Length: 142
Image (tube, rainbow, N blue to C red):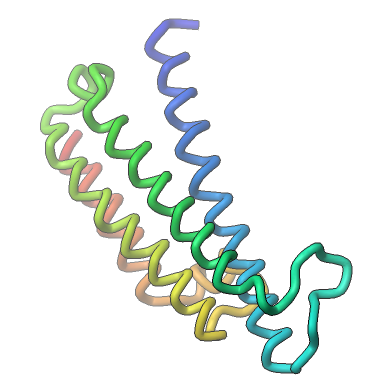
């Protein structure tokens, strides 16, 4: 395997880790919103209680910011400069990702997101627009 492919896989692994942890936390936050609505003290079979909602929300935000930081570091890497015609445009994906993950966490905090954040995103028009915008930015950067 070439050095470039190896490094790209490491970037993808780090980015995926933070992104999917953020999505998992959105799911946990949704569970906590449901528990609070039903006035239960804890989520059955889980190690957290309704009072943990603010900490769970902060962890989700930290993970989302981590994903954006990894993406920003990748955009600045030599691999990107060699592979893209206009790598500076990739910076525009960072605020799109931060907006999308932040919005998802905010909606979970409000109890709007159902049990699965991915299924919510599939049905959500704003998520589609954010995804299409990110893809368009990458296409122009290539």
